[in-house]
Length: 339
Image (cartoon, rainbow, N blue to C red; front, side, top):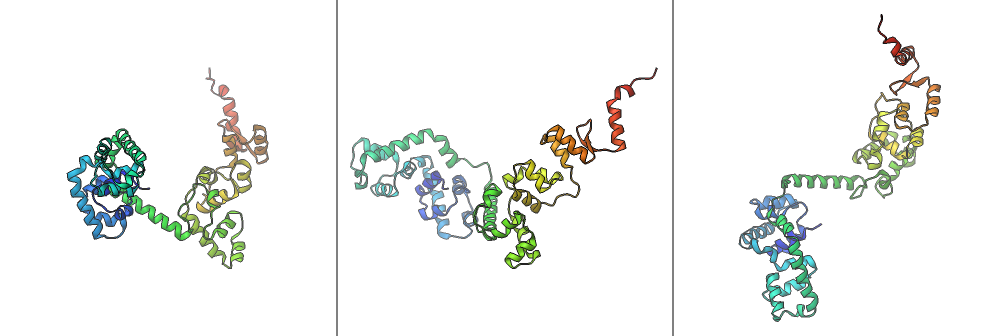
């Protein structure tokens, strides 16, 4: 998205529209561009290629900036912010009009204006007033854009932009898409490369079944899926179950029974992350989050030789745990001082 203030300012200072259009005004701030001593290096960093013509235009703009920066926001180009066409602005310039204030005076004095202006004099006069009103309420914004150095250093923003470009290139290479949605289920609705292989695996098919369908070996299918999952993020609808699946000994049927998650989310987590060999009992999760009624949980634990101890933890029936419970429940007796 273009920064209109920066675009109008550069146009006023003599930079051609073609060069302005090439600039990523979301990355480079006007203050930095107009005060940069190494313009050729900056342009190459921003564009990824050299341009002697662009450098000469920006260097000329830097010279012009020293002369007119105090009146820059009064430039005729700024009428484009409130909807004036490029054709109208160029027509006014050809007739010697350079600033909005100058144009406003000509309107008030009923001076003759170009033909393009006279086609819609009332509408055009309204544009002038609209910009003057906008300027009054946006003085701080104009100063911030034109005269204030950004808090985040340009080199940091360039590095972030380069990283985003690399990420976008990877997405195009692996999936043929420009952007990944925030949720896994939304991503699976897209038409991306090798979608059928990934969807089949997330839906529970084995590597062998997928390999037979596509004429690939089990190992090749595993490699493709592993690489795809590696390139993808931890989606919002996956992240909420990240701790559950990687901490507790929960199987797919239990996951579907006790959560609002899907088979695709569960399988994605197990593919993207290696689950530890030592996992906390699922019963402890059910107890902590009250996922099962107390009586039902108690019966479930009894069937598995477990119980809920005084610390509200699931513990196995063993001599040591039973003795601990007896000692805790009768601690007043055992703590009575001897006479």
